[in-house]
Image: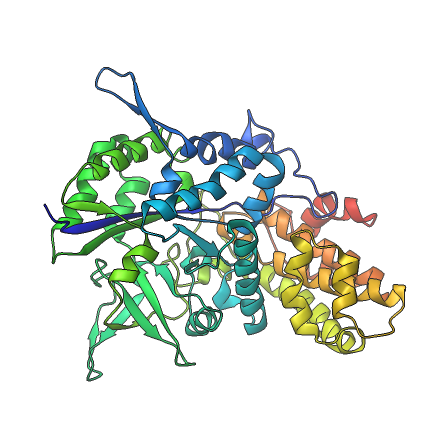
Length: 496
């Protein structure tokens, strides 16, 4: 029987860089008990089990084990892969090898997608930061997986036209968005059809014609089925998952694609035994004669997009208000008390913007006196983060004749730029209060920026920054950003 439909399951695997920027180590996190921190816990519950997920037989006996990664589409955040490489090397090696296995499963097309570097909300980033984030994500992917990425996952699927243009310019062929991020589709005559509100048909790819004239393919995942997997109990039974996906794949024109996207941690962490349900579904789908498992790159090779689409500018998959979750009190949050608000988000971003503008202005003014091309050096600095000797790197990028102190200053300026981008890691705004682990993380990155800038330039930005933090109020009585900074950041800087 010929294949009538295809199924692609995508998992977005990500953790923020949890290392304390002053010590290089992940601090103990009691909320992750019985594990020392959340990276350790989620690795044990999800990342490692998905390499060899158990499938049970009819009597509850072990039937087989499945490497889920090798049969699904997936992306791993560079900061997570960096931690796994150092702290769970067998899991890390298994994930890298899973992409190689997927190449043999899917006709020469690997399942791994790249991800921009440290999960910043790209529509809220400067254009230069957008480009560096994309370049660093590609370089990290090539370093780890040994091939050029065809697709790139956008953090929180947050998108705007400029970001898509940069992806296309950097050689990325496709990305994946929520169906609610489609605005309209156009026929060859230019007539538009409104598909907003999630009304786009997700069973085929589309393309965006970017400002530079380079098209990029876009897959809009199946929203209802993805929601059922993440929140509505479909993962309680692998058979239910397989039947749901097969039903979508075969209920349309031949060659239709049923595809879903969720946080990868759904499989085993958010849902206990979710990796087993996924493995069972994979085995059932592989045995279904009229449905074929695939990944996005393989499907795109045989089904190029034919319809132009316009995306909703400044939209994402986890905020009904676009990208407001990362800059305003829009009402989207996770946890917290009924009377809490997120009015702290806007002033937090403003404080970090102030700091970023100050250090970037200094980088622009001093970079020309230190580096042959300051922005190219910043884009290539990922080589140092991936292990290249800083001395070799700066010899290549610094102006001739610089002494050791000036070369050290050039390296410090580049590291400031690295840390300034880490300040904007999306998790800092995602949850319910200024006191959260993830918000403390972005404040620590800010402190590291201040410390490096003080050493490199002699200018102390801390007093003005702390003054700004004092105007940001937590939901906890009499707790402002100033107190959080003093208790969690200043202690590492020897300041008060």
